[in-house]
Image (cartoon, rainbow, N blue to C red; front, side, top):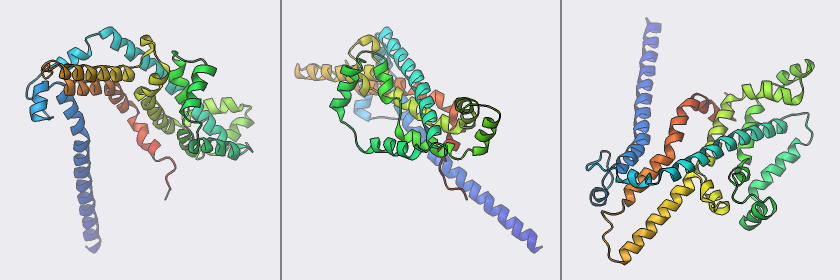
Length: 301
């Protein structure tokens, strides 16, 4: 009887902990979802309503004026989307491959210079040449101004992601590589056929961060792109917002009523929806790897 009461008590404790956990997760999920709902709702709300009542969860006065203005020139925004998609796809694939390959070399115990190279990579995170030498290198020496390479190569590799990938690859048993070498496989063959398939959680996590970095990058375009045909989405929206603010100031200085002419706040929200949409849709496909990848380097009990 005593054993039954103990088991019954432990079951009640587990149920209580599960209930508390689900409630807390539900509250956290609600807190995370509410800002997205507000952004979407505000993008579909009349500008005057936002000015008088602020942002809300449900549009009080529905208006699609912000999206109409945003897509007034559909060819431009579609071209900007295309540039961003190409840069994100190529930059993520190349960056992920180079990051994984570099991390694999640094974690190989038979590579005697691995600590020296690791220190060299780490040193670059502490000191840099500055913006002007970097700009001169990209524009004058590498001649990449107004090219897609200027949007891909300067941000191709991140030292932090190399260290994260290295920590994960260090957990793969050396016996796998050694057995493949006995069978006659070379280093590159081992890396492609064995190491990469075993590194899916780390690849998914680092790949998501790389994709987000390329997708949200507007600074590289600001520095290196002056051709409208090579303008990525984020920089296109940045310029549109700058032009909007210029129009608002000009109209205010001339005494013109801008409340019904330019949807300022709702247009900003519409830009956010357009810029974040594809990334939000892509996240569920890699979510199953993401949690495991975030635990890279955790202490095992």
